[in-house]
Image 1 (cartoon, one colour):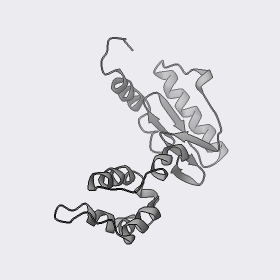
Image 2: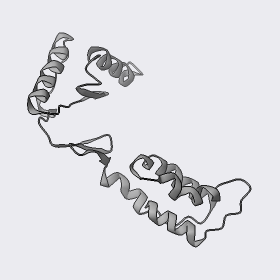
Image 3: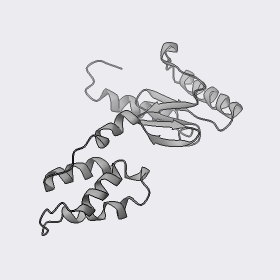
Length: 157
């Protein structure tokens, strides 16, 4: 990749997606120069690694053995932990949510909700829990931090 290319990451991502087209949904995930190969069984996983290596070899792309990790049960990837149990949040990333102080203004509350929306898919019944908080952010309502809001806020944390 030329050094002067201003959008090198996007160009390389496109190259990786092109070369691994057809494998990405069934056997691997690609983000920039990271490739995570998956498989439900050891044999399937080994076969998927073989397919990825064949595609990379065909495209004359070289892997760095120092950066490769094989047959992991759990992987930290893009701020998440991916394992046989599924995808969960990374404890280091959720620390910001846990340490968030109680909002004192609508701006503080909007900031918290904006951050937390990213993690909402990991919280069952998020919309019903956060309902009282969202009402506080409406344009016509006065900011009134009631006991119900504090309960919802702590429940989300």
